[in-house]
Image (cartoon, rainbow, N blue to C red; front, side, top):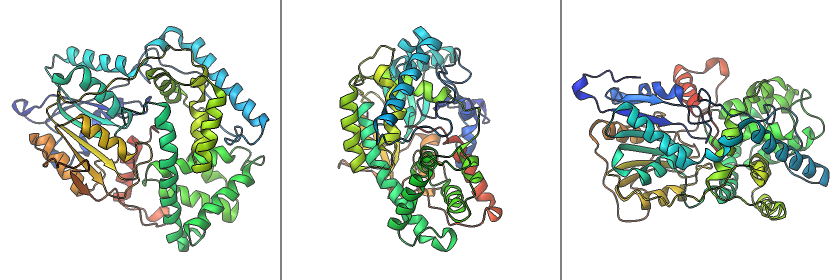
Length: 448
């Protein structure tokens, strides 16, 4: 979307990447509308589908129903389940090779950064402004390392730790999701008058695992098994936006065995495989990935015993990397010292990109300032109506001014997080909630 201010006030192109990797970005051309007080009006907002994604050609897809209904249980409690997942994973990698071929050797973040530079050249712009979410922060970090003088205003929300890509980052996520889902279980318990799922977080958690066990071998409606229930709750570990929807659907299942709301939340065929395919094409090749399944099994069982909520689901989501046909690269040694300014945003208990990663990025971008959404669990939730954070974004976009950077290895500004919702019947959801849901649509690309 082109700037709506007078041409003399134009601040140039603002490229937006929603994360993933594998998130489609064309719709982010309207993201400037979410910036308060018209502070986005002086920029040309550019959303784009990275290579392999969506409208980009070729668009990568491997096995369209890989993330579909009633799959083998995530937790491989017997050899049959384990063999089924290993077969599925290898079949997926083989299908990607058959469908994409040489493209798989050219899907690294370094090559995506070169694509950003091609966009800059095509625009005839001396510099780019950049707003990256989740994986988009890592893409921005790599671009900043390669082309530091080409970046002007930089906002990173949900910061990827550049020292952890990508094998270790998934293990770190497992522990972080365990913390985040505990916060969600506690929230459900505080609203037991609405959901009737337990008066303590522990009771809600036990109910969740009991229902997962019940669904094993007996999926709700014949389609929603334990994996699908895990995936639904995983969304609550990412964002507060849909907390009511997940709790309502789960409560309906527990009390009335009403499975259709679970299906509606999970989605219906045909499933879009593009995001998962591109995700793997990047993470399997950005850095070396283990090829040893015994090592993989041991590491993920250890993770499971510490953090059972997400560990094996995350493991199988990534397991095609065990036999991935694309050529692996080496991770970039990120150096943001040549960037004049950057605004970093992260909530304390963000599970997808833990807060320690934001501190690492702050270290590597010495001209940056970090905002912490204190105690929050929402991933990449900027411009969600938190005045403390939004006001800083507005001022930075308008004038380039940032708050003072502190001397400690800590956040420079502490703000409220995206607020937890107050439950109310779906029919009484306010206009503000509808707008929040619209913002959440942009966050719906699940960055893992």
